[in-house]
Amino acid sequence: MNSQDVILGLLMHHSLSGYDIKHKMETFLSYFNNASFGTIYPMLSKMEKEGLITKESVMQEGKPNKNLYSITEAGQYQFKQYMYSPIENDEFKSDAMTRLFFGEFVEAHIMVDVLEEFLNRTKVNLERLRQLYVDCQPEMSPTQEICIQIGIHNSESKIHTLTQGITRLKNVEQK
Image (cartoon, rainbow, N blue to C red; front, top):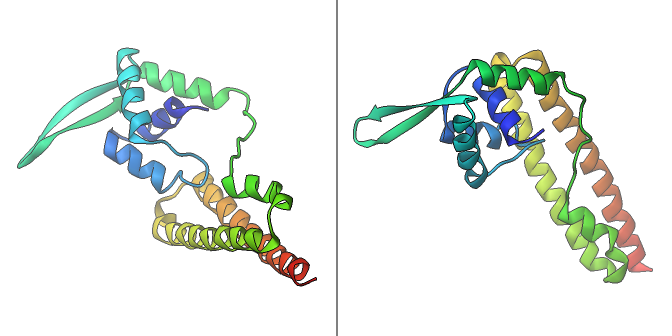
């Protein structure tokens, strides 16, 4: 999976601007995918040159023109190829998890602070996912709903484990 696959998938429903694509990545897809404008716009340009999408400039009153991107038949074919291809292994990167792995090299209270920050961020993310689920559930496909539910359950599990870990490290610190 790469940014091209995600963009093509987003364009399967209807035309979108680069801003709309970024917004969908920051909301619906943020639990398992991310991309910056620095990734999205060069990818859109590349895909347009490859004939996978087209760009239409839409005039807006009092604003700069808006570029709307639409998927072509070649783009639909490319997206279907992705959907039928073997599933790739998930990638997971976490600064907090890396620090936790090497936590033996600093004082326990430092790691408690790291875990508490990780816990707070996870709680914020969980609430964001829950709100997204409430706000968007009526218009979600069953498969999109499953994605959000996985994110919610994983966040709940992470909160449970982090809370236990903080208690454990505080006990180590007291000894």
